[in-house]
Length: 171
Image (cartoon, rainbow, N blue to C red; front, top):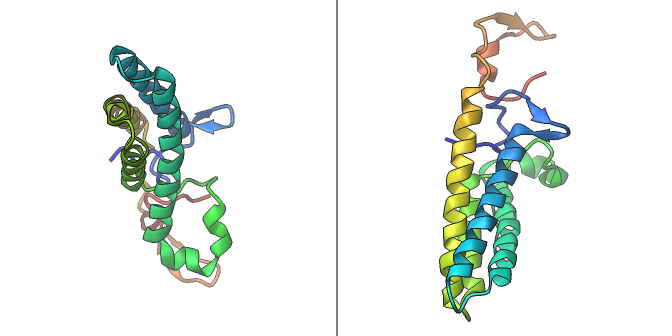
């Protein structure tokens, strides 16, 4: 799983400036997708490079909305208690496959009048997805070591284990 933006704390907190390494991986994948769509569109006679690039960026936007909606649906019990937290994306919380599905459906819908536009857009999405998985695999190699097997107690003296929090963000 290359879940770079799952919000589940699978990767160490490393980054460049204010951006986490996972966010940079997603941005790099978007750039790869845009370049691919642009290049493929340039090789097709009836397809505008500009249109391919713009529709691809729109697909990224709607894919991000679909990914967030999918994540909220997956964790609905928690979000229904605090609906305002649905808008707080600073801790991640995107379901990658629903985002890809949303982007592909948007491309399919948007390219109805110009079916030739689908080839560069779907090529862009595919290469962007592969780049993102590759970035996720690289980041996965930087993964933090497993939590130690420590038995601790809460403030009300209830026993807990650090391993119960494996894969979740903790402070």
